[in-house]
Amino acid sequence: MNAGSRRGDEPPGGPSTRRRTFLAAAGAGLLTACAPPAPPATGHRSLVLPTDQSATDRHVEFANWTQYIDVDEQTGRFPTLDAFAKATGMTVGYHEEIDDNDLYVNKISPQLRAGQSINRDIIVLSDWMVNRVIEAQLVQPLELIRMPHTSNILPSLVDAPFDPGRQYSLPWQSGLTGIGYDASRVKPIKTLDDLWRPDLKGKVVGLTEWRDTVGLVLRAQGVDPAKPFGTDQFANAMTVIDKQLHDGQIRRIRGNSYVQDLQSGNALAGMVWSGDIATLRAETGNPHWTFVVPESGGMLWSDNAVIPITSTRRRNAEQLLDWYFRPEVAAEVAAWVNYICPVAGAQKQMASVDPELADDPLIFPSDEFLRTRTSVFRALSAAEEAEYASMWTKVVGQ
Image (cartoon, rainbow, N blue to C red):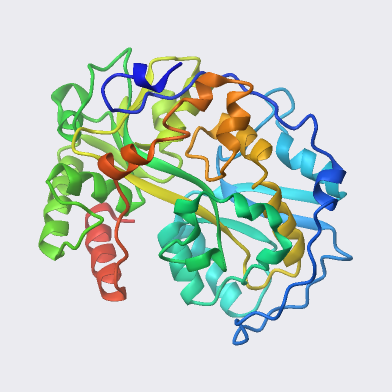
């Protein structure tokens, strides 16, 4: 399907739910053929790193958000992880346990600060939280020279403001925050204000990631969250959220589990993450779930993989992360999660098997669309972060 056939300039509700396999040719030779030389000393001498035991402990523990990797519907296993294990001889423990950045990091940070193991070698966090854990020295620097396929990172993601040169983090997926709704039960939604219609009272969900929820409201009020704004504008956005919660228009505000309300029918619409709508289609068999970027614009974000400071299997973790920057592997994941793929070459791999997915702007959006229709929430000072988080908590309670 050609992207130009989509309605207006809004991304579609997502591609078909067909799942493809790109890894038939992947094998041990792919990974071992490009082993790079030992890295030079880095500039991160202030960090005290644990002794790496990867050579004798051939295992990786990976914590991620739910529904954020390819899954075999018959077995419940993860094909790209199984292919990695076969290619390397490692075992991988995969945990879908992250539901909210603050909640997760608040849980693990006391152990990390105390130098205690959390038994996780890779965790995936949103961009702003990655900035926080880097500054707090809770993650290890990457030896990129050992990770040759990371050269496939999309150029626009290489010099992230929170991690220039990607010394500590690698993009896992990027995505859009917009509006999702069941078009079989809800009239078309084009603006954020449409969520406040009487027919949707008590049937709307929001996101606990306040940069996403507040960001959409700011854009609807004519404020670009990527540019300087002040407390008054943030307060105006919070007034809208407070009113819709108090009036019962918003059913509740949740983390990744908001999808459960949509899936059960307790909610019919909400402020959502783009890839979740495609997943809803697949899991409910309802092709009418629709994702739109509101006319006022949407939010663009990225989730990034980091290695906790207490991991003793850093090189195993690096090897696994490098695996996911192979275009054929990245395409396999993108075909499942339907978020923006961060790997150059993955679109070509997708096009050779499923042109519809390769043309889908939710997975491979144009630079023009991202530039004109989305915003990345600007970096906040520590004082702003504390003030805005407090304002959010007073209204939402989390």
